[in-house]
Image 1 (tube, one colour):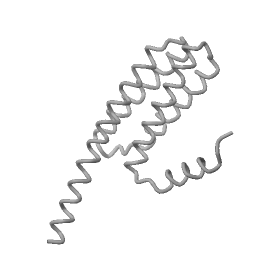
Image 2 (spheres, rainbow, N blue to C red):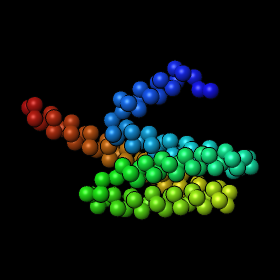
Image 3 (tube, one colour):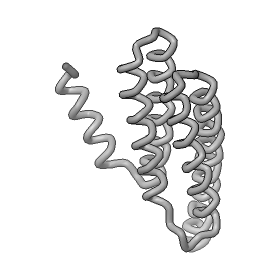
Image 4 (tube, helix red, strand yellow):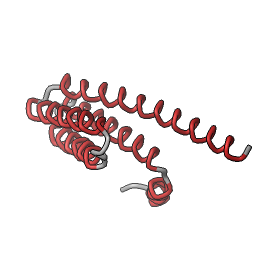
Length: 134
């Protein structure tokens, strides 16, 4: 059973997070779940592997659901997420770690790209605010 204080902290973190922070949390969660799934496969704890790989798929489905298709990038991301789900399913069915590791690498790359985009957007909006107040 989890610590109630930790659960409260986690709930508060999610409820007060910006959309950008939530996006990064989703990527972090998917990566963590896949790594736990990999550990399950490696230890031949297939019930654990299945549980965590399914959780990772649910997070990726959530990432897909959050896409705004008025932007062209959304179509590309949707296809990438679809590919990741397929690879996770293959890793889970075949109990083969390389499928899962590939998805982790893709998620890490996307997470870093989003972090950089968020940083640029934040610095751009800060510059606009400074210019408006000048």
